[in-house]
Length: 308
Image (cartoon, rainbow, N blue to C red; front, side, top):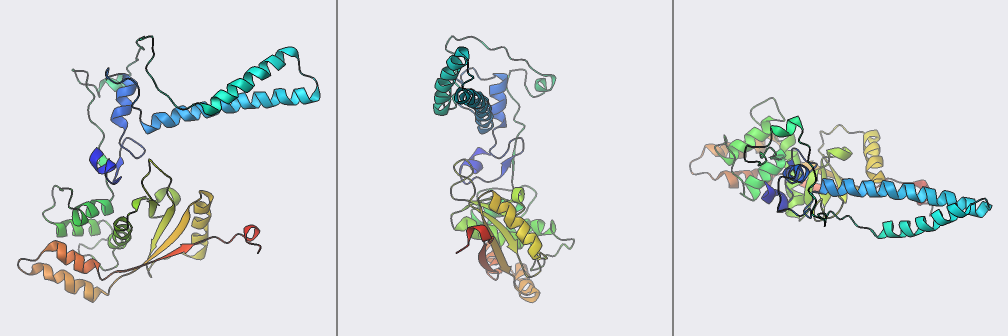
């Protein structure tokens, strides 16, 4: 599970925001690992601590600004002047502070309260049950099997069976069509992955994919990708709405147009599966090569910023 995440950022932990950190967070919360000195923290814990520090900093800054205003108005007392000087030093230190989670130097043992629901996830030996698993998108699963050959899938006899199964989730017919939504999305996913992008789900911003240069732990996504075909029923109002949302989070909107082959060409290639000694990987490679990909960057025109 961790190998898939660390070597490509595939999938999502079902009990975490993205990186599967539930086990580490729970072990830290319940103090189940005495060898941990408190240095290995999950991203969620670090984010929580930073938010608490920012909240405290804003409260102290507001108090300092209030005293500063009194000083300008000449109505400040000696006690408030002393408090203002202390706040100024404290704010300077808070600006420099970094998130640190070190074990207490005095060696005191912190009392941990076990909730009723926590007892169900701890074994008799005091170990945590591994409840979290990695959830993959269909396009990620097919890419790992078809392009990289790095996973084995149970209840699937062959690569072609996996292809049919993924297509069936987007169609009522057991026989896929050339404009099947899974194939359309996979073409875009495969294109960006093979060009070095880290591709994640874009549902958070109303698109199909997000593109990262390195991955979620390092930088924010730079592009939001919407996959379209000639059958897509988006109008300009919907596109403009998506562009407004994407622009507000400082990302670039990319429209990907997929041209799919005719149903006759599609069926003709798939019929080769009945031939003897046919390689399913080469068959699907020939099939997917019939699709054409093009991309357009959409930028929202803002009159106040483009007066020239």
